[in-house]
Length: 374
Ligand SMILES: *Cc1c(COP(=O)(O)O)cnc(C)c1O
Image (cartoon, rainbow, N blue to C red; front, side):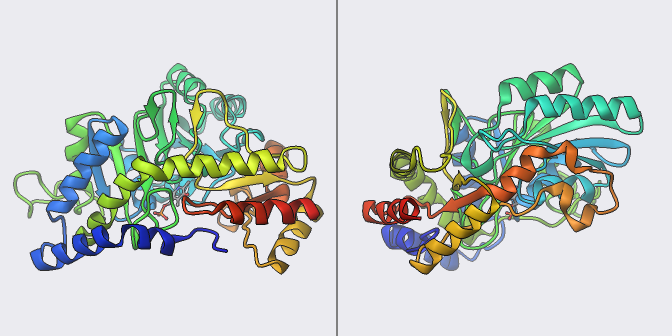
């Protein structure tokens, strides 16, 4: 059994992916070829945001968004404590002050209450100006944007949606990558919309922001004279080959993969209810199930379950074994454990089960029966 089955997906889409890649090789426009422009247009329509600018990976997408807003030294950037490092590290990359925020144990996403106390703390200290909230759609489920956007607005802050794991999610009829003042996603192979290497994108509302991002991703090049570099940016572009892979994958995600993912999640939840804490999706929310993560009673039970599954040939993963506040890179910061009780609990108790759109019913029952036996 595979944790993420990229081979099954390739077999399903082989004809289109192979033809698309061969066309790129024949066309010879490997950097910013026509497939990249077509993908950007499809992605912006798909999520319902005016502009999409692709780039080299999700980490760069986060940094580009912060550069676009001129975030840097003296600014405070708030990000959830329980996430992939890049969601938080991007703040430090641009020289801003990172403030990790505790999560909600029911959704694993940033807790709006914890965000309010973290902002109050920074304001009381007065050393840094609260500027940006990075909300992560962890494991495919959108964060609580109604409250997070209201809190940010009350403090004059911007919201950046990190939908690296969230492409395909929704709240009501609003799609992931349409929340906040800008959004990003990642096309790392194992994400809900993945390519065959690295890739990412930034989504914005305005033509000015779109032009700024296009300049920033090409070393700050001028809009008319490309050898007049007007600002400091980076080199971060999506390969044309990756765009050719993503075009049929985007179509498959919308046609049937999201439905298959949600059916698989429902089967897990039905079979496991009463045995472990299953993921809770609030009313009106749709997850794209980048991960299906359960909570066991405590660390010993979680580690035991992972071993028990492994002995039966079932892969599982711990996302994430430690909080951002516990990362060695931030060892010099004052981030006491008491501020992050829910992150600490999630790190000890969480376990992600095999999840992808090509899971068979027999795979799901194999996992759930093994867990129940345990
Ligand atoms: C994967 C991920 C990123 C970074 O994406 P890359 O393409 O790997 O650089 C950022 N944020 C979150 C939440 C992620 O899961």
